[in-house]
Structure formats: C-alpha cells, structure tokens
Image (cartoon, rainbow, N blue to C red; front, side, top):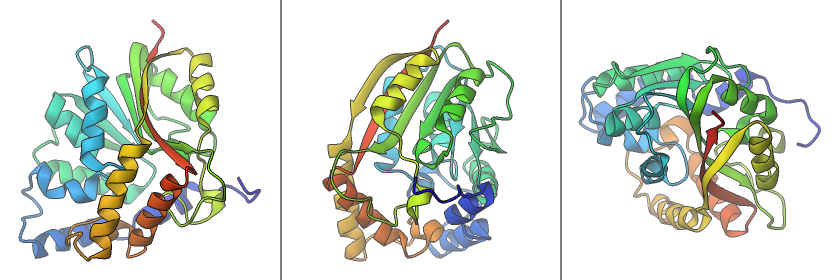
Length: 282
C-alpha cells in the first residue's frame, strides 16, 4: 500500500461496473443478434469470465477441485457470475455468488435466468471481509482474482474458514506479487492507483492458510500459460478483433490498456498467477 486511505466499498464497486450495466449488456447482446433473455453460457463467456485465462482457466481449476463430496459452493467475488454458472452447469452444483458490486449481483441474476440456471444459482451483495452466511454453510469456497482487492486479507481468510464445513475446500485462482523489478504498471483491471491494489505475497498467503487450519492439496504457478493467453488477446485487441462482446463493455475502452499492462506486468515478473486447493481440517 502507498499510505493513502483504503477505498470504500462504494468506490471499489464504482470502479468495476458502470451505472446501468445490465442495460449496456442487453443492448450489446441485441446488436450481436442474440435474445438477452434466452442465452447459452457460450453466448456470454466473453463478458462473464473477467479473469486472466478466461473460461479455460476456470475449467482447469474445476477439473482439479474434486467436487465429488460437494453440493454447495460459494463463488467469492463472483463478478457477473460466469464461474457461478459454469460450476452449476458443468458440475451440477448449487452455487452462491457473492460480490461487493451491486450491478454485478443484479447482472448475475439476470444472466442466470437467461441461461436457465437460476434454480441452481443465487447472488448476494456482500463483502468478503464480513460474509453474510452461517458457520459451515459451504462445501467449497471458490476465489478467483479476489484477494488482490481485499484490504484485510487475514480477516477475509478467517471468514472463508468460518463458512467452510470441516473437510470443505478452498479453491483459488489468484494474482500474487512477483519478484520482478519496478512498480506495477497501471491501470490494471483491479486497480487504477497503487492504493487500489492489494496483491498478496505468496509465501505469506501460504503460511496464513496453514495457520488457520487449511491443508494444502495442490498448487500450480500458471504464469507462463497466463502470459501466452494474454499475449494472444492483446494482439487481437490491437487488431480490433476482440468482437462486439468483450470486457470493455464493463471496464470501458481503458480495458485494452489494462490488458496490455497485465501482459507487461506478467512478462516482467511483477505479478504471478497461481491456482491451488486447500482443505479445512475435519
């Protein structure tokens, strides 16, 4: 952190979604020849998987997650609900998406109705640092590009353990601080200014997870795959080939600069991308 006061929840929410997001996306879908109230998950993958690696990265982690003993999952920081729906659709889970951005929550509800997944998904407006759920409510908690926006990560991790049942699992796909030289190149999707970014240190994160009773199951550094994915998409964006449905509908035209900065930060080693799983002690 740079010493400036931490942004309020309202400020964070306003950075992530423009006012009237649902109407913006509805109009874009209509212009793309789609019925915004009757959609397939494939139709909206470009605007509901707002993380490095897109839907393929979500499926990669889900394939390693072992949901055989899971029924209820919390998708923490769910955005517009892409992974919430993916887990419900691909794995038959009952998934609750939580996000601090009200427009993401309402958009997630609409897209779940439109894709026929409303019965298996629900969306809640809330803060990862103070989860509005009872103890042991979930068999798994999924966190995808969430920790980088949490000012008090130890508090959020304590909350995750509280809502996990014994034997439940935490699955993460996160951006962490790298060892590369130089300051983080901004803006990036999670931060316009240094005070907006709360990238965790990986060693500190792993130690904290162990301290609070989470046993490591697997962890993989997928930075190289993420860099290749981002290079491919940055090239498409530079050539104007990203299509009408893309994250700039949510982040604005600055998204293309953000994407390029993510690529350059990855290439310089200033950030790393990891996926991993941990199990709460029984």
